[in-house]
Length: 319
Image 1: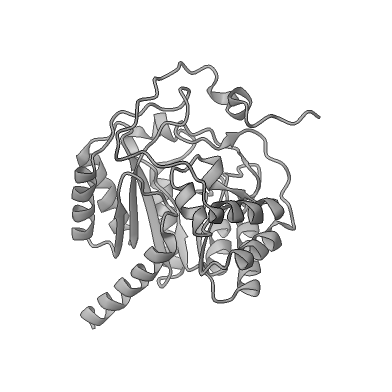
Image 2: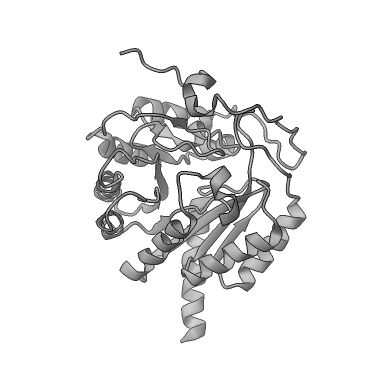
């Protein structure tokens, strides 16, 4: 069987080839970042390559890859590099994934040790082809890291387990990640265009169920702006998240990967992001990160330390 060339746009995103091209807008100066050149970046790349690991940093074209990798931070993307979903915003390849690699959890744990990570973010593609959506594989990865580097705190950014039994989520929560993250991605009114394979209220309920299963576990979610949403809808998502007891909110600027992806409707100014952050903190989130370059795992280690401190402060205040 001939393998797909994932560097070829048509083979990477076959489901998007019938879409018309949308112009890719020139980025404003507050969005632009320098190309990665540091030795730390090269060292991180070598460790990931030597352990045959995929990162969402590369696959999703994250603008912060140079900064994060130069510090030895990378977000591991497990269960392959091909997703069963075809979201209009996402640059991860779509199609039929390969079988799970039973040795991957161990390789991730080795890489975490070699990178000397105090905090690691583990994400994955959607695996609608698997009965449990890959929940057991995620849990095995958490346990492998715990065995190798017990002091490392672990954050998982999971799929929505839309087609799975309730036990899938329970499997991940029982493995005791320090942070459970699942992104809502956008406002509910844009789901049919932006995230057609997902359901807004299912994702919201997933986050709520985490807290029901383990009230002590930190929960986190994020959205992108600039997709065509209005401010009122963003505030409603904040309210929905707080009703689900989400602790940590991230808001970042959507960047269009190719002309076949959903267009950027607007570049949101840093001042508007600051307004969103102020509003979110007023609604009771323990932690908020809202900047044009914010991504789910950007500065995740530092943010986790602040998140933990914020909870302790709130407990002291309430007690």
